[in-house]
Amino acid sequence: MDDGTHRPESDRVTSEIASLDFASVSPEEFARIVKRLTPREIKEIAQGELRTRVLAEVFGRMDRQFRPEAAGPLDALIRWKVTGGDGDVVYETRIKDGTCTVTEGRSENESRVTLIMGDAEFLKLVSGNGNPVTMFLTRKLKLVGDAGLAAGLPRYFDIPKA
Image 1 (cartoon, one colour):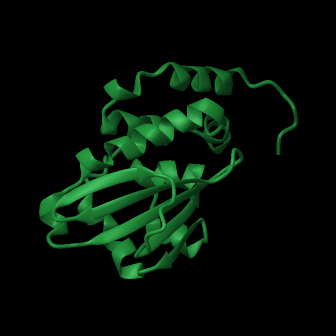
Image 2 (cartoon, rainbow, N blue to C red):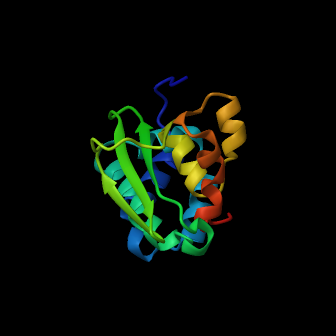
């Protein structure tokens, strides 16, 4: 509950993250940063231009974190819907022919699975700080479509460990 009390520590963390050059932050460093964040701090980060920057950087790295040898002949469109105070953001990941391409926005193509989660859950999931099974069982992560594909996604990407 927000009692209106000013919290300098949250302001400092938000300011530090806003000043980060995300391109120079390794996935492992990003995982450590996310691990230290409180839910309140994530909520503050997940607003406006900073939210856009963080999501763009995470999705922009997916092709580099992709493990083609693990995906083999997989052909699938995975839709990611990240919900938050600034509205929903949608990205799509296409895995095909040993490549992973990421696009922002929802296409007319049929996805094999759609993953729906809030900003905090998304950041925890992609930084290796959240358990997808627990998130699913507690309804913090919803999925529509191929649950088997969703369960296998961690195999296809190098997910950092904090």
